[in-house]
Length: 178
Image (tube, rainbow, N blue to C red; front, side, top):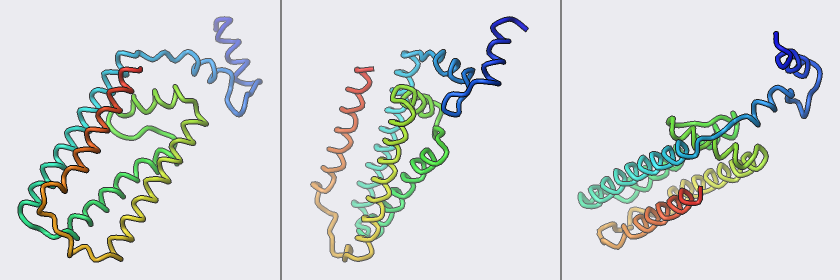
């Protein structure tokens, strides 16, 4: 055993800092992020998000074109909101990244960049916000009469397109600032 290994072994056994061994702290500080890999992963994640949004857009247009009811559409949107809340809760409870490989790389980089406490606080705010929105949307779905809503106007799709464009602009700015 080399001298460095024996010192690490000694530090690991005897000295603790906030419940984390010195050896663990050394490994955390040695972590070097390849910025090009993170950028590539963020770009891939943006493409994946855009494909999902395109799929939802086409589905929405097809659904409206066929003249289906608004209550079924809003019910499916409620289910999608609750499905969106599940990864946030998992991330908050387990503290692990969830999703595709590129998504996990981006989440781990963000956690490393922001620090543990700030990351946990932001994750908690995100999870609470998504759960609140999902709950309000679901309650309004059952309380309000949504069958009287007409979905035949082409202007109904503009908020969706605006949100999609805004999301892309913000992600591109974040990617360029990296």
